[in-house]
Structure formats: C-alpha cells, structure tokens
Amino acid sequence: MIDTVIVDASVALSWLLPGEETDKSLRLRDYAVENSAVKLLVPSLFWYEVGNVLWVAVKRGRLIQSEAAEALKTLTDFQFDIAGIEITEVLAISFSQDLAVYDAAYLHLAQNYKASLWTIDKRLIKAAQKLLIRVEPEL
Image (spheres, rainbow, N blue to C red):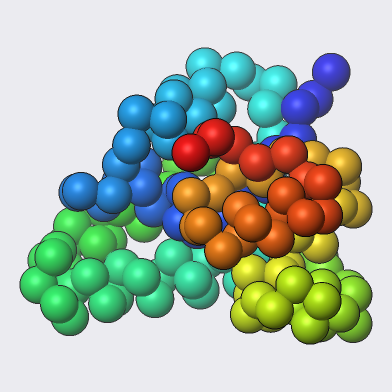
C-alpha cells in the first residue's frame, strides 16, 4: 500500500537549511527515505517556493550560491511527485482560511488525496486542523 503525504516547502527546506531543522521534521525525512511505500506529493509551485527561499538565503548571506544549488539537488533526489491543482478550489480555500493561495494549494492536495500534510508553517497547521487534515510533525 502506498502512503501518500503532501510535503510543503517549509518542512522540506527544514531538512536542508542550517538552523531550520527540528528533530521532528528530520524524523519525517528519515521515514520518507527508509520507506519506499511513501509517495511524496507536491504542487508544481513547490519548486518555485523552494527556489525562492534558497535565493533569499543567498541574498541574505545564510548560504553561498553553491550551497543553495547543492540543497536544491538534494531535494530533487527525493523524487517528489507533482500533482495538479484546481485553482478555483484553491482560491476558495484561500479565502475561507485566510491564507495565501500558494499555501492553500497544499491544503487542496491534502483534501483531494485524503493525505497527511507535512509542514512546520504554523498558519498552515492551524488552517489544516480546521479542515480536519492530519498534520505532521506535531509541534
């Protein structure tokens, strides 16, 4: 049986960026690596979000450009599956939960796939809980 989870950029980046990792998020990473039956699903915007965070980290001096490139390469090794979204549904979630549209995309996928959401974004966690979406790691 395939276990599908929705991974948002905040938790994926916590696996790589210095000072962002937590024991709980690293346990999720290890679980995904050790269990081939886990399908990591993301919206296509995930890569733009990740790339932007890495770009900002370089601009702010947290990373050098080669470290950002290596972090991106490491994330691609996870072989995330990309799922399409229905933008009208995402926008409706965005309005109902008072979230940015790109955050609502993760909730939309979690609802559609009846999957857990892996995130460390506190606003996203609150919205997911209101929508009865299981969130990991529990903070």
